[in-house]
Length: 351
Image (cartoon, one colour):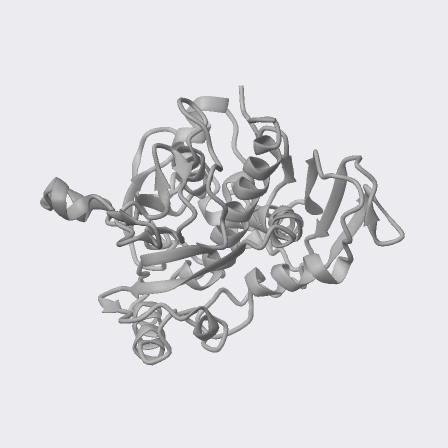
């Protein structure tokens, strides 16, 4: 049984395929009285859409959102908010030569073995195009958490072997690599272009900060904030690793080093990344996600066809040589969605 729904009180259900007529999302649980306009949703969709620079796929989708229900005269009604994004630049014939092949790094083989059928056109539901739906839902969530003083900002802190030295949310949207360090952006962009020239791809790391999160979001044992955030972020196909605060570096620290001491004025450090015991501490929530190289590359790869015969695969078509510039707003969206859901859930935690 497949699940296309995420969330507990605030729930999103996405639908559609990469090369179908449209994709979309239904968000249930949005409180009534929330001011929402198509422009608010479109702002975040424009950050994710393809074709914005020479670092991304040239597929030219406007990603124009249509709000079909749940909003009346610019205000949510308390009923499901349905949003539609039509596909206008799909070129399905580019996939005809590989429709009987399993592309390495893709969900082709595992999904075929699970369902006995697959949509070879741009990966169908497994395509990163589906994340536009999550960004639309995340824009709604941002409208909820902003009213409580929360702000979510993500940015690239590593692309290939180029690392950022600072995390400046204001720098992210001033460069095409979506680098959180303006000084590192040119080298990051060059690394992506170099990979593309070699008919290859590269990955990296995206860091996300949540400022203004109140203490008390999340609940032990099975609704821990970091666990739910992990489920949301790992739900993105390109994510292969995740760490909060000190993360894996904690393995090399002693307890006296890792523990965040407290004074009447607040915490002395933030090795926990703003979440302790599965509950937000009131500090900045910080996590980093490892993003794999885009699997669609134009270099020859060894694989098999649907009959099990060995073949060589070359993936043509339009693909991102690095998914990081376009996954940054998706990570923001999923983070905001989790926080909005947790904020609504927290209303029932105590009198």
